[in-house]
Length: 100
Image (cartoon, rainbow, N blue to C red; front, side, top):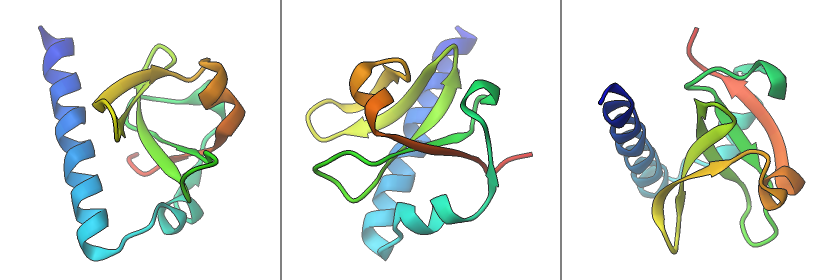
């Protein structure tokens, strides 16, 4: 049950972040530029993972552990994907730690 609470919290955060970013014009570029860089193999739950997909300026998700990250999708809403997925692996940009 604890895992369910965690994923719902992450989903809430993603919706909040994406809504605020859209409303106030906050771009993932500025978030990706600052904060501590994290190597992919040293990711911890809560770290932000950034991607550079072809149709978007940038895409960001929250790492939730075990090689997975939560993010928003225009077709699926909030969803969980694997970092090892060929699409995300190809467009992976960097990871940042904003919480210590």
